[in-house]
Image (cartoon, rainbow, N blue to C red; front, side, top):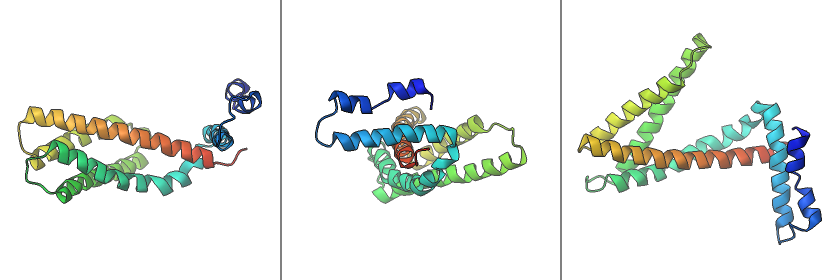
Length: 176
């Protein structure tokens, strides 16, 4: 990590100056220092985060299923569906993402330089919208608005979860 960044992120100076003297502050400072050091390690060796991601990412995706089902239930009420139906639909969408992701991985093995991010996003968006319309029938315009709100809330929550997972992951990396 460059010295300029280290000097600006030097938490020990805060401890010595007395700005961090509250109860538990030393533990928080130690965690922050581990995270800062871990970011340096992660930037130098990105694959060092793989064990943490391998362990926690599947759990994170399973934990988000009931949250997604709750959003679907809130926006799809008065449809006569039970909560298990909403969870099934959310699981169906996740399974579709994994299936398309597997196909993308296979295609990338055959053509390494091929960029598939936007096509994957477009395929998932169209398929998810059509699946939403078939599961929660109604006006296509309002269904699109509802589905857009659901996807936005889910995306923001998944982004927050991924940032938290990244901070946790870099804080567990050994300092070099």
